[in-house]
Image (cartoon, rainbow, N blue to C red; front, side, top):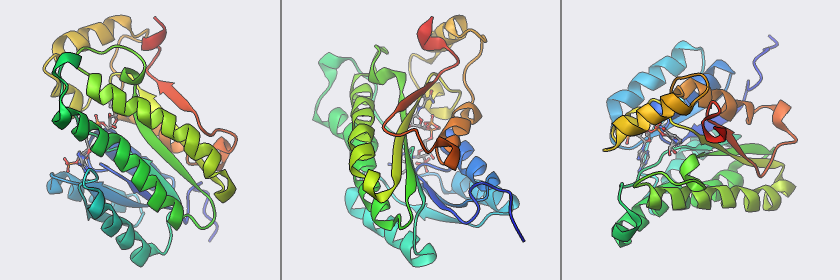
Length: 252
Ligand SMILES: NC(=O)c1ccc[n+]([C@@H]2O[C@H](COP(=O)([O-])OP(=O)(O)OC[C@H]3O[C@@H](n4cnc5c(N)ncnc54)[C@H](OP(=O)(O)O)[C@@H]3O)[C@@H](O)[C@H]2O)c1
């Protein structure tokens, strides 16, 4: 039977694919025909629910528990994918962590947490993903406006996101011979647990509503749509870019 799903036969890994934006990406990839490896770390129940929803969409999927900030365990995650599928076509580096605090309070712990989970997990994950991409592939990392704009308390996370945006440019050139496109999607304020957990959520929320032309916060699905477009053949001429998806917040 001929499938009309654009990602039929593709194998995808979504880090932090169990909740928030990662969940929306996992489900959209499944809708598009991909088999989805859903990575999680702490919340198994959410991951199981997401996997169930992947399967209800007629796709195969696998749960992989791994703290992406612990780089020694990354190998095991990619070994699991190799054993089960023999390849990887799509790598979405979405999991993120960080502590909020002014630049004057940034210490080793804050710096290392943001860099380990956000930036280095992307670098080492992309290296391992590229090794499993036999017929080309797509790598997409999640960034945020804090990479190039001031967000109160966001310094260490913003710096890790700036690193991600720089990494996709180097990856785009150096993975080009392997036919791998590498991009980042930079979201505005998106209604997820991560945003609600910020100590300054209330003023951020009000400012986002006021400044966004459509007068609402972004939804995980708004970001997932662009991330998944970057995994389709139609995005073949897009590489090394950071695409801002913020409903116009940053231009007002
Ligand atoms: N929300 C926003 O406003 C916004 C804006 C721009 C960009 N982004 C970016 O979008 C991405 C997703 O954000 P979100 O708001 O959807 O976050 P979220 O709702 O907090 O979800 C985070 C996900 O990452 C997983 N995770 C956290 N630490 C992990 C680790 N060490 N190893 C593996 N998985 C881990 C979580 O799983 P467990 O619960 O199992 O640990 C969960 O699935 C992040 O890169 C974020 O920076 C978000």
